[in-house]
Length: 96
Image 1: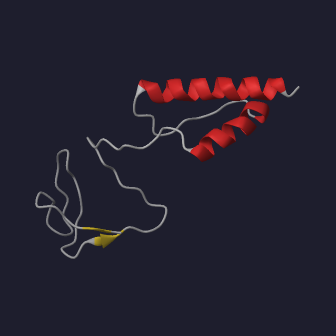
Image 2: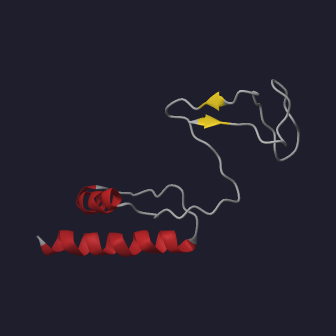
Image 3: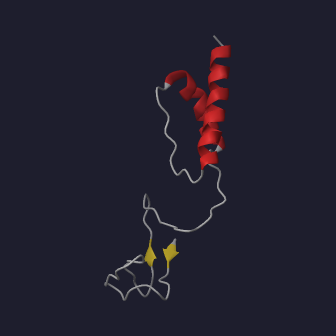
């Protein structure tokens, strides 16, 4: 993926103070693997838990002592995890 510099970016090789501190290149830059981007004030329509996460919860309910949830955007994300974990725990105990 190539990111192009918007008009407000600092000149190449220079830093700009304030909330939009950045480095840029007139030709853009290539994001390498395992590098992230920050999208402040952007509403992304992505689920808090993916189908793979839900499958993993079944295993975690039986074997894990603690579960973490990254990229929480709203309280309902945590509520969803709590509900799905409760379902996974009930399923795990039903098989005993």
